[in-house]
Image (cartoon, rainbow, N blue to C red; front, top):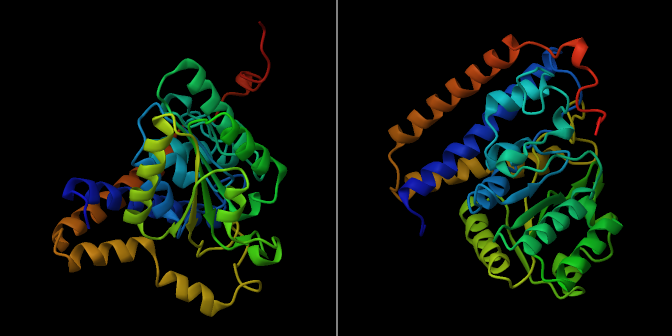
Length: 322
């Protein structure tokens, strides 16, 4: 693996942080203490981490309804994110956004989105803004395989290609749009063909291999930052949980398929590789694992003890007086 020890430790720590965060959200949601609706990122951590590790703090990320991992990978703190899911005043949106409407522009995170493919025009717009201002920023748009048959996908790719915008389209192809297999929703399942229609280069890669995502994302981001236009990355991955909490995740998938993908877990594969290649001692990884457990436990304590928003401020941020 042609990566430094400092980098691989950072990648492993962040993937583990996302996994433990999502497991805590799952636990709290099943206990009935978290409001709203959650779509967990368990199994797809390598995509967000591999891509966002290549970004600068002021680069933009636009997310989906399954966006906790993107937010954490871009720099949102676990305690702030969990407080937001809990509807607390200390959340990144002061408890007003929730899981599908997270937003933290200070770290370049332009939001999760409950509408399929709706983040694509936003990401293209952010790239257009960066180009006009000549800031050297890039924009990354995450979306699932269910988004590629939406008009926003085609309109976004067309405009980005036409104007050579600094945007990277990242398709997290987890094979299912809710319960619909991708092969049953699109005659053309090769995203390279869809990208080629707009003159955009496409890379298909193993989305459960964080080092492969890191390397491919780096090339695409450098290309965009250097004025050479957009790219499309198809990261083949899998959510090992249901589409949302409440969906058992079987019926439309076999147990055998789910178990096979669990064996391809990005965390387990990366950990095993670090040990097999003797890059990192097991005791160092164990220390990171313990520190991450503590971090997420403290985040939950912080979120639970945080105050709920005041009823006097319920309209704050809803209407503008100017």
